[in-house]
Amino acid sequence: MSDNDQDQDQKTEQPSEKRLSEAFERGQFAKSHELSVMFPLVALFAVLGFTLQSASREIAEYAVAMFTRFAVTPVSRDNVPALLSEALFTTGRALGPVLLGCVGAALLAGGVQSGFRLTPKALTLKFENLDFAAGFGRVFSKAALVRGGIDALKLIAIGSTLYLGARGLMMDPLFSSPVEAAYLGQFLTQATLLFLSRLILALGIVAAISYGYEKFRTNRQLMMTREEVKEERRNAEGNLQLKAAMRRMARRLMQKQMLAAVPTADVVVTNPTHFAVALKYERGRDQAPVVLAKGENRMAQRIKALAAEHGVPTVENKPVARLLFSLGRVGETIPAELYQAVAGILAVVYRTHRYYFHRLKSRRMEAVA
Image (cartoon, rainbow, N blue to C red):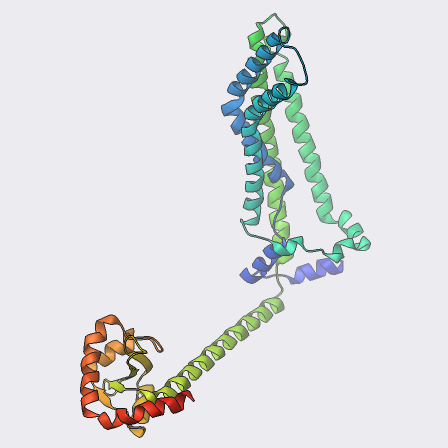
């Protein structure tokens, strides 16, 4: 047993979402060349089914008109561009839907197989692909043998379709008795659609086998050992712990900034025990009162203690404190629906604590400095 087989035997776990996502970015997903051929063929069959008769009639009418004018239309340097433009326009109008349908189907085939995801890493140069020994091993690998079998099956399917179709068409009256000229166009239309439909059916079976094998092979390559699953889980948990630590650090930093701003507040509105919100309002600078700090339970007690230490007025108003805590955001103005209630609180504070506001201006200047 080779080393690759032993490694594969150890991979007993299904690939995780992270491993599948990384594989898609590298371009490692189930890809079938037969499926990429099938989609344009189906598009060609569908477009021809709707446009073949009208396109054939248009080209035939143009050919008749062109050959009719040959006897009376002189060919010169002046009218050749116009004649070529007319021919290209007529041909392009007839074949344009076919080309657009095939191109769209080819893009759709690629999108269906890739899950409509971008694979930027698949475009990077991989030096391991230049390894002659590895390339030689890929040529004589099990996957190459399976691919050869699928190619042989594809050749048999196409050959059988063409042989059976041709044998059936040889029984047509066109090859055994005189027919009208118009019948030739009808025969070609029916023969084209018949060949395409049988070819699509035969290649569809081959494409299903090919894509199923590629899906199985890719999934088997991406399978993981138990140690890889454990390692990925540990890394994921480590990332979650790191993110949680960063959130805690950001929360502590924000709390520190809030507590540092409490001594410069105009008033602290309390619940009285559950919530505390510190507000400031500077005329000519703030459009409305601004939330400097807010907290509940223990944080509320710390805000109240700082307010008492620095003489910041404290007003107990349960509904306003609860609404300020729920709707207010630190560093932003209070919600418009609380303007009137907060204005009443500030008016009372300004009247009863004039001595505090006399010192507050200098305290704010010190805090900014």
